Amino acid sequence: MITNPVSGAWYLVRGFSLITKPGIRAYVVIPLLINIAFFSSVIAVGMRYFDTFVQQIQPALPDWLAWLSWLFWILFLVTALLVTFYTFSLAANIFSGPFNSLLAEAVEEYLTGRKPEQAGGWKKALADFIPGVAMEIKKFLYLAMWTCVLMVLFVIPMVQIVAPFLWILYTAWSLSLEYMDYPMANHGFKFPDNKKKMSERRLQTMGFGFATSVATLIPIANFLVLPAAVAGATALWVEKFQKTTTP
Picture 1: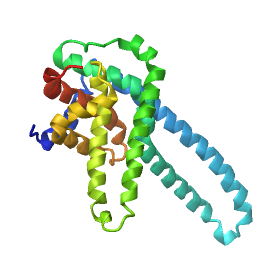
Picture 2 (picture 1 turned 120 degrees about the vertical axis):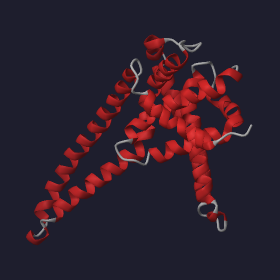
Picture 3 (picture 1 turned 90 degrees about the horizontal axis):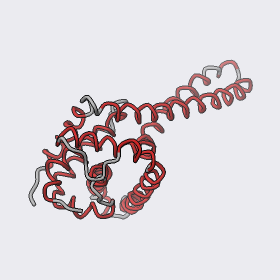
Picture 4 (picture 1 turned 30 degrees about the horizontal axis):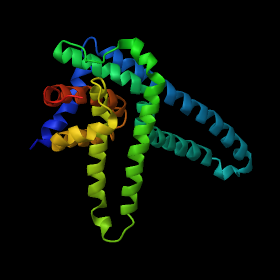
């Protein structure tokens, strides 16, 4: 089936609009606050230990090198920002995974006027929290395996030329798999089976994944990319996949 990658990318923009709708915002705010609290706590603890480190080495510095303590703090802040940026998606998916199913459920109900077949609300989300975290870890390990394979290509002569392009394609495909999993799981689909169905609209889903990967590079805004991607993937599922799909 020939599909348009640009229309897939537009679904991410659609997702940003959907997460502002009444009845959907709550499913965005709660996991967002959890992730902000987690990273704030990690950074606060890191600052405390780093301050102790700076105080221990400062007496050993001559007066003319006292300015290095400020340099140390600048390096710490830059490192903290980089660690937050590169680990946010992983941590956010682990902590927010069960809530993302609720978000996908709310978006589908908003778009269609009815709940998914396997909707269960907060009670089901709480019951599925531990299994949901386990599934997120399994998805991460699956994607990490292919990440390692692609990293090897960067050190193989000649193949190095195409490795960056393969990396871009892989990132787009893996992100589309990640976020399409939520609305599909609400209809009884399992993560390993989603690849086959999504391949029917490969260009469209990869367009969505590519737009998501670009959006995650924007500092601060990337905190909202996750819920927007879940909402956009749900809209993509409802409008392009659901009518022709059965578990």
